[in-house]
Length: 360
Ligand SMILES: *Cc1c(COP(=O)(O)O)cnc(C)c1O
Image (cartoon, rainbow, N blue to C red; front, side, top):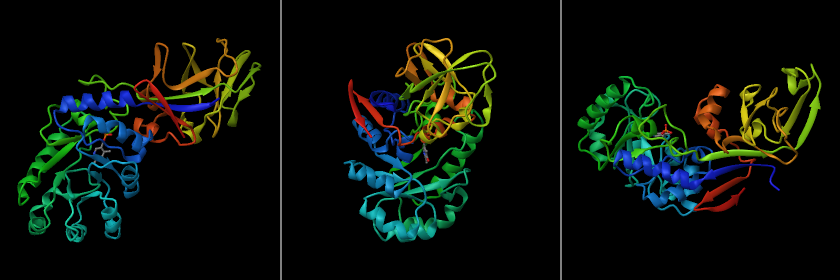
């Protein structure tokens, strides 16, 4: 019997992808980097493949190779800058780099293979500055990119930054010798904010995995991930007795405490200590004391909890749901950290078309 596991609803993932594609009105370039935001990059890509996406986005050559080994044949873009000594590895994997550095562009161009030009319009992270494109026009005429894109730094906010970034992007596009076949800019929150897309493809990430960029958007994602664990011990403690490291929680009166075999090494964040809430048989139960590496304790005083009962730490149980966003708020973290923090120690159970597939 599995003691603790993560469930991933691949049908919900695809519904979320279809909702973004319908709203944007352009094909998807789903971001499956960081192992599909912690939910399994290859599994996510194989499931999303049926939406006929343009291609997939990853962060590293290693992640791209995993998709190729798993049978993904569509274009795969590596979105972090590559070093020149990685060029051979990208060729071997049939991966498409996102480039911004003139020297690396020069070297890649000798391969004659496709690449995308990244324009830095204000994120100051990767890509060629928008106001330097004109200066590199000769290079870009020799080494023509197949695609050009930028990335919004605050798409989830309703501020003027997007307009400014789009103006800079337009300026960069105008400075190119010609317009590449593919032009893209939007992440998930950008599509939630404004549609239809003005570009050729869109690049959603977190929305696919069940998290909205902000409250009250035009489309809402279905939850994709749940974390569940069985109660492995129960004890009754007396007034004033403490629970867990550093004794940060003390019982007022007699309390019943349940131990579940999930801790911060599984991605149940330590900052949920004394703050997290979980679901048990239709009720909310609270974390008592520090979350430890392998175990977390809950106050189950007002329940009839038994050994082996399933606690839902993340996801839906009955009529209630602990969303990734709720967990992130309680933990004082971003939803991106909650998802990518889900660790491989927990077995993953994938559900697709009412079938359940258990994978380690
Ligand atoms: C991660 C990433 C995305 C997806 O962002 P979300 O906020 O998860 O939708 C899109 N484009 C680039 C370049 C990224 O790095």
